Length: 172
Ligand code: AMP
Image (cartoon, rainbow, N blue to C red; front, side, top):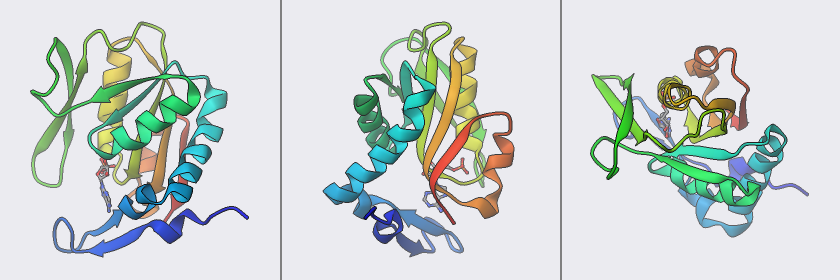
């Protein structure tokens, strides 16, 4: 019997701000059976897209991204908040509820023509996913898929990613 990943997602009302229901995936990551099953399902979808690289942003994107890359025999690229990466970077800025934020990757992290799967824990408005697409494509990489553990369908993130191959393991 396959596990229902929903059983290890915890809803945290009013975090990080009033009115937001935060989908906490830490119980899933902490449970060896559920964590392995989530990576198995992500790999089952991403594998046929034959990525050379998996890209994830800190912090939860590192956890799922590194495990997925290992499973697929792909490399992992860390997208980080400004000022964390030691060498020359490129940057993409995205909209937050109040103001903007940015992600950076090393300029030499994506070889031209490399096939890249982008991963994150939650698809909400799609803003951060768009920034990651911009980083990959700006360096000449090809986004062959964008995978999430959770999609919050009522926020319309998928529409912002139109034209891309998008997949989520769980939808709310
Ligand atoms: P967005 O750019 O709006 O798609 O937001 C995606 C990022 O914000 C992801 O990296 C998520 O980890 C985080 N996020 C947004 N909304 C939630 C939520 N309700 N629960 C957990 N994480 C969220």
